Every structure is written in C-alpha cells, then in structure tokens.
Length: 383
Image (cartoon, rainbow, N blue to C red; front, side, top):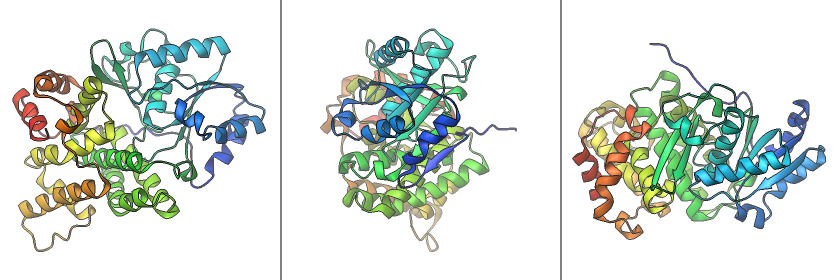
C-alpha cells in the first residue's frame, strides 16, 4: 500500500528560533497577521516576543486573544470576524494546541467558506489551501503546530470532534524552547504526557509506517528520559530542548499514522467536562494500552524498551506489563496519575461518551476493535 506523509515545509527549532521568523515572513511578502492566542500569554507578556519580531520587520498585526483551553466553534467564528475586520492576509498562532487548533479552523474556513463542522465529515475534505498559517509553539505536547489535526468543541451538544485536513499544515512552524521555559509544572506534565500518548498510539496504529515508527520510538525515548526533569526544573534547557524534539517527532508520527482510543475517549472528557486534554490522556493511556496489547504484543515490548525497561530476561507478557508500569510510574512522578472521579466524572455520562468515542475519527486506527461496553469498562476502570 502507498502512504502519504505530511509535515510543514519549514520548521524553525531551538533556543531563540523566533528571531529568524521576521525575515522568513518578509521574503514571503506577507503583510498583516491575525495573531491567535489566549489572554494569559498576552497578560504575562510572552506574546511580545512575537509582536516585537513582527514590528522589527514592519509586519502589521491584529490580536485575537479569546481562545479557550478547549477551543470552541465560537472561537473560530470570532476569529474569522476579526480577520475580516482587520483585513489580515495570514494567520499566526501563538501558544499551545488550543491556539493552533483555533487558528487552523480560522485559516481553513476563511479560504474555503462554510462552518468548521463541515470539514469534520471525513478527512481532507477542504478544496482550497487555507490562508497562510504560521504556528509558534509554547508547549511541548500537542504537536498541533505541525499536524493535520485540529480538535474543536461544540458547546451546544457537549461534543469535541477532530478535523483532519491536509491543508492544516502550516507554511512555517516555530519551536523555540526559550518560549517554553515559563511553562508551569502542571502544564509541562500534562502536555508531556499528551506527547507520550501521541507516540504510543501512533506506534501501534493500524496506519503506522516505517517512518512513523522511527519517529514514535525516538519520541518515546526522549520523553521518558526528559519529562520529569523538565517538570521539576523548567529552567533546564537540555530537558526543554529534548522535550521540544520529542513532541515534534511524536507529531510527525501521529499526524501521519493517526491515533486510537485514548484520544477518542479523551476528546469526550474534554467535550462533556471541559477537562485538560493531556491529563485525560495520561489517565487513560495505561488502561487502553493493556486493552491494545492483546492485539499488538510485540509493539508494546518495543515501547517498554523505549521507556527504558530492560526486557532481556522477561517473558513477552512481563515485558508488556513492565512497559505499561513504566508509563504509570512516569505519570505518578509528574503528577498526572489521577482518577476521573476526582475530576468530576460520573457514571451517568459514561455510555454517552463511549458511543461518541467510537464515532470519533481517531478510533478508526486503533489496533483492537472494542464494543460499546468495553469502552465503558475502560472509562469505569479509571473512575
């Protein structure tokens, strides 16, 4: 079978990479940016790193800072209104996955028309390239700065759905670890566990290829070795750089191999309870991994090795469990090993969320097919 591999044509990486952005934008003759971000990043002054760079190259901008942690359809509609009002010719997202996902929706709908929900019915359904999009990342987790995915919340019916479109790929992605130093410990932990989940799910996906496999395994190694240090000491540049590369490699993997039940279930927790996405992934990953290991045992032995487990004197079953236990140990170490009930999740919503999870596009590439009751059982095991 043939496969297609999507990633940005250019990524600026490393400490102070943002300082190279202005000259790249000038060479593309882009005039006015809509900056899509959240109010906190504006309030603490981090967005000034971007606006100063734009000003130094005489590039005009307007700022939309209303993005929510789980970006909504209204965020996209409000951003589109400001884009038209300010006559912007390109979009820059600044932040984590929420800012990137909202910006993708704005740029895609601006070029193609309609409503963002229209592009969730199938994959790669847009007809035209989106407005030029530049993504500037401030977290090491979602990899939304370089993927073909955006996750949007419909507040009206408490659903959260993925949009998968090749036109989401930005023209430039920026991963500047200096922008990540100020990340709080919990955000570092949650986004890091999100990245680990991307890598694990991509590695066992039914759409995996040798390219995505190599990216996923290296991502697991980098994240397992550096996440705890990045959480404990955010000033550690070596750990921050390693996490930056780890999350990007995980993005390369899942943007092309897709994901599985962890993400399809976590999307529902975000839609119904407005919970932190990376935290939901951290809670669900061990349980879903045990379910999936029945179908792909050798792949979970590989994951155990990448997590730093010496499997040489273990049976396959022992190696699989040791690898999953290593994931659980890392989650405990960084503070994401919580219970869903502690976050307000109740039994009454499990069937609703389970059905929506099975309808989620991420479920299509899970290596083992589950029944509705099996998804409910996985949710219940983490209550």
